[in-house]
Length: 453
Image 1 (tube, helix red, strand yellow):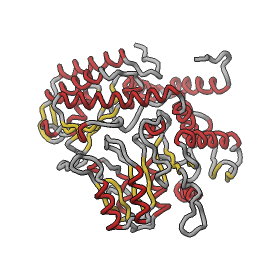
Image 2 (tube, one colour; image 1 turned 90 degrees about the vertical axis):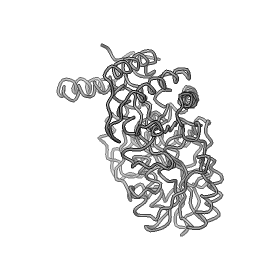
Image 3 (cartoon, one colour; image 1 turned 45 degrees about the horizontal axis):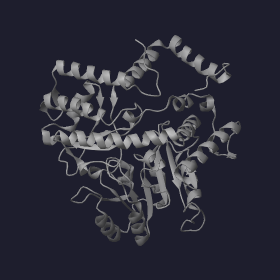
Image 4 (cartoon, one colour; image 1 turned 135 degrees about the horizontal axis):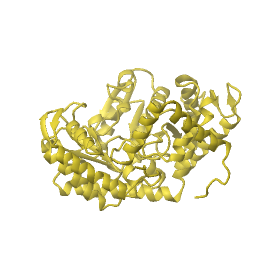
């Protein structure tokens, strides 16, 4: 990598910022330093995040944060936005290129916000919404009663068939029965490839809009490893931090339907989304986050990213196999993406106890409900794992056997004292934690400097 020959104004700004934080707020600096060390020395095996590239993180700390920039490039409500416009335009063009979209809004602050923007653009309160049930792998924003999506709209849920695949017959039957205004496809805990075309066919049959939430598979879609919904769905949403290795934020994209008129003929779908993001839902965007999105999307366009995306899937399949070889029930019997959902209650352990015990040992997963789960969301019968954070460590498929051996040791030695209470032998915790730290030294985060002792 080419080094800076002369320190630039921006480089001095960043160095001065770190020095000021260290000297003027050592308490906060120490906490942040400890978090860096923690991330460097644990196996991040959660599906809901990745390890952002440092250059994207640096964008979050830029003086762009000081600019109020309500509106869009070329049409701001404030002065001083010349370079802000350049950044946002760059992010838009990179998003469109990465996903083959005709339109992209990069201001939306999260995938949750993106989904809500689409819902409030296409539905009136009380109208029907058809989305995937939470226990089957859907997201809170797909119609759960815990979310605004399930409280403002009349949400109906579809689930899985006897093979634990999306039940497309049920989707069609429910769509024709309830006539939803919006159908949501896409998941948060479903490990198989999604066929987008049947969803669009069903949406067209009942006169519904189709929203594809690709938050968990955006990197695989951009890399061409998972089919793209861009020209099947009317709207495609994602976040930029789970699998794009960028800053935290959301995107709303539209493919061939970008200039389709709304039912009243007053707007196009893309203009409708623009107006719903600003001024309906949001005010001034976080332009530092937009810069981080632009940087992350540049990484997505690189040959290196495609190799990482393929490694995500290779590691995930090896991880699922290693669990099954140990006698665990893996939901759907395997995986096509980065997600592996494991039934741990069949081994007499709740998901929350498994999550906490593994975290004690330096392995980060999350509790997760499984199809037909009898446990509440705060307890669960399963755990969800992902390989985004492992791929950026340049781990190999054979490493997954060692990871599962360590997980299995923890789960088979912890003593469950209640649904949310457990005991773990200190010797087991120390030995597993030591083994995890050894793996982390052997397979360090490829983009992060190793912490110094």
